[in-house]
Length: 131
Length: 131
DNA sequence: ATATATGCAAAGCTTTTGCCCTTTC
DNA sequence: GAAAGGGCAAAAGCTTTGCATATAT
Image (cartoon, rainbow over all chains, first blue to last red; front, side, top):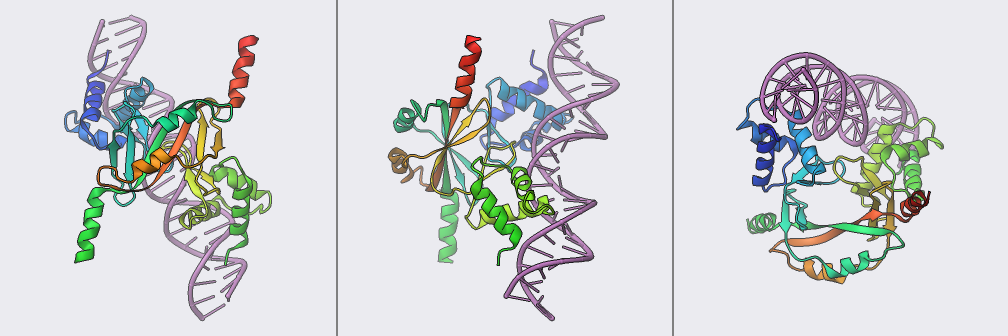
């Protein structure tokens, strides 16, 4: 059976749409469970990932981020502010076609990430230009 | 001017086609410069990345890997052995088309990675099945 | 001389782990 | 009362950094 801690960690992750780090989840969960420990948050996030209820995000050298949205989707990572946006569009047929046979490997899945300047930072840049 | 250490680190990274970690570069460079320190390797790899001569690879929670090949290419990461293979095919026009305008963001680039079982592990699996 | 880079060791951060206690069935 | 999970603190692992020294222009 799921512990109270586990349930609230899962709920919290589902509610947070910011692709939070373990520590950010911890800070949020602590509002409801002041005695929870960071270790418990890590243990449960790892378990959720293992069981397929969450995914890991982020690049080597960065803190791991977690995402409770396990539907196939893509991300835009802003080079300026680091925010991660969800992009939902259909699977890309060209990629699926490529996956059928790549150099004799068995390709099962792919990840696609976009980089650039997000709309928020774009607006800020404009303001500074005009100032 | 580039120091001897820097030159050899760069050469070594270019020669290694395994997408090595900093420590793997260090081990290799040490064969030529026995007194080099791991800190120097890190400092130089970071500088090479900053200057655009190398790229970082890998996911959060893993050790960073480095790649001196900065031409646009893709990777296949084997779920079984962790090896990273280079895949060289043309830019995917569908993705380029998508990048033109995603939700008002300025998208500049993308990364695409494939997952699956590489040809080596595929062969090994077959052998075990027949044994 | 002045700036830059190295080697070494210590520090920093994120994440995991051991141990003992608590909760649940 | 066994099994699973939590809290706490220590440990682990990768990476960065401070400092004194060396190298290069």
